[in-house]
Amino acid sequence: MAIIDRNSILFEGSLTTETTGPAVALNALRLPGRMEPMPLRLSVTESFSPDEVQGIAIGLEESDSASGPWTAVPGASVNVPHSAENPALAAGARPYHRFLPQGVRKGWLRLTLGLTPVNGKSTSQGRIFAALTREEDLPYEAALMAGR
Image (cartoon, rainbow, N blue to C red; front, side):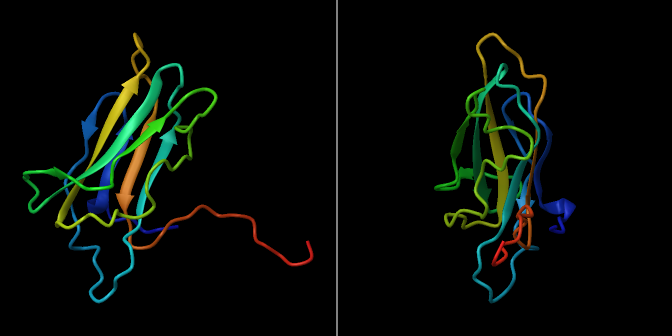
């Protein structure tokens, strides 16, 4: 389990329309002298209904200050299609990068989320949590044991 600082949360809550998360400073998460990638956790905490949502566009924007101007981070945009046959936005899914993209060069980040609803439908369910962490937070898996 990763320790998450509340100042590093990119988005938390229900997603019913296109939205932009708060500005997050990278200065507290950088470890001087270490060139390892910075972990990023984005999880679906409540399933999106395939009857209501066709997909989500996820991206990152960067800036030199919390007030902007903001530009898109190269290589950070992902479109996640969602359907009954391929429920990519079910609870527990992690439909985004595990680490910050290499294109991040500035000191402030924010997450952009674009929801694509099914024509004529409104979105009533679906929640997302996204944050920067110091260590990678992977789900537990069964241990590999010789002879079993």
